[in-house]
Length: 98
Image (cartoon, rainbow, N blue to C red; front, top):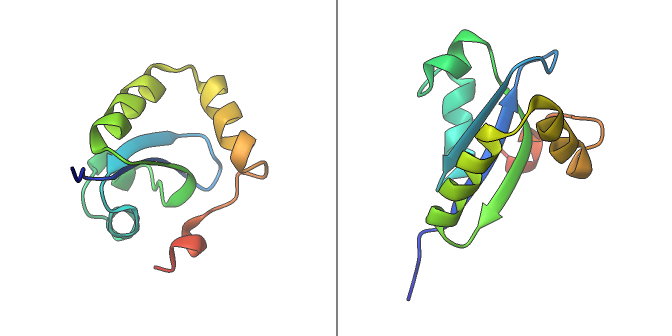
């Protein structure tokens, strides 16, 4: 049986003071939408144009569950998660070849 895949991702602003956690089945397109002011008003309002973290799931339902979990986390836990795979908290958009 084929399942729709998914990604959980974290976007931030230049100073890494605000985070947005989202879920999508097409990470490249969704990040492009955020950069170009489409979609989330929160992302647009706070200029969250930097991709700091993404996590792939075979099933979109698992990605949705993970998104809900991460949204309940304290800020420090989110930062530790990001730094576990992206220690410098650098923008990962270039890896998506937008």
